[in-house]
Length: 423
Image (cartoon, rainbow, N blue to C red; front, side, top):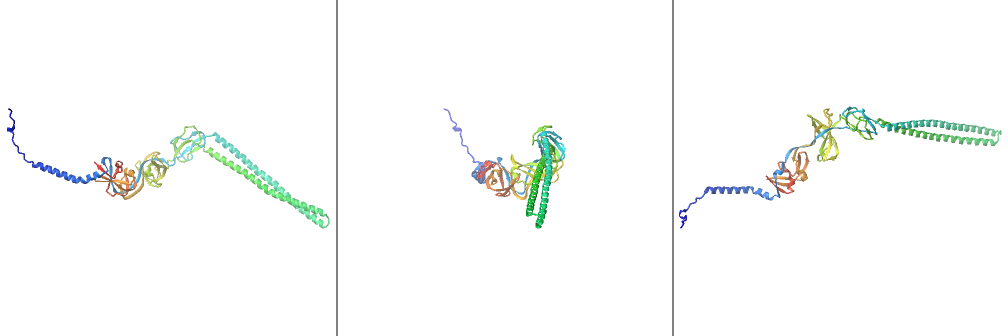
């Protein structure tokens, strides 16, 4: 029979571990205190509609201070006056200059050979000469006809006077019984006939004189009209010598030497280097705030020049609006066409303005609300924004200095009223 180990067993007395109890009690108290301290935050966490990691967000603090609205961009030097010259008539072109040549106003840059135009000028000049001869002949004919009419009038007047004297003699002779009454009546009829002839001669002299004047005036006007046509053709022939409209430099040549071109074809461009401006591209959102005459700064090559906005394009191209600045003083001599310069246009400058860093929240909310952050909870808060610059936005209502808001990434909030922000 096998014996068990019961005879070897003995009771072991377990002593209570007070240190362990103290440690467990301390841990319990710490956990309870932590729960009490985190209870408000935990409550807010559970009350939030969503939770977003802070790494996906950008924050900014509302500040009070100076507010400067300006536009900074890169510009390029362009000529304020850069005319392109065109062919006024079709023909073969001979260039007198090369690209880059310095030219003076009125200098011939190219000539166009147009036989058609020169022949037309010669024909119309011949017509003008013929019309001048007709006009002069009409004047001579008019003088001759006036002489004939005046002669007829003078003769009629003499006949009238003779008839009056004849009647006077017959009346005296009849009174003395020397002539019969028939002769007196015949003298009266002769006088009456002479008077009628004189009246017609006088009327013909006035009417024919007016008619002759009209004929002369008509030929004169026709001649003057022809002279105007000749003058216009002469201008066109003179324009075959393409001249520079300004002092400057030849820019681009659009044709080859001795090329045959059509009317209104581009020939070359001239750059007026004495009137340079700086062209810049402005974002559409800022373009509406630009105005003619606004002050600006133009910098480059270690120099800073004062400028004024001189032109703003009415057209938007790829979200940009072209604007030009002219130099307030004389144009710097060291600048060149298409040279790159930095441009800054001051729109507004104020002190003691409540602002916050600009972010996408302005576009996402239309400036009507922002998410105010407090204890890792972002709360949707109505606000009202004012002017904006490149890096700041003016706060008119809804926020105060020191407030911390979410400026970008709020698209993930999906319009929730409260959002928990996790680390």
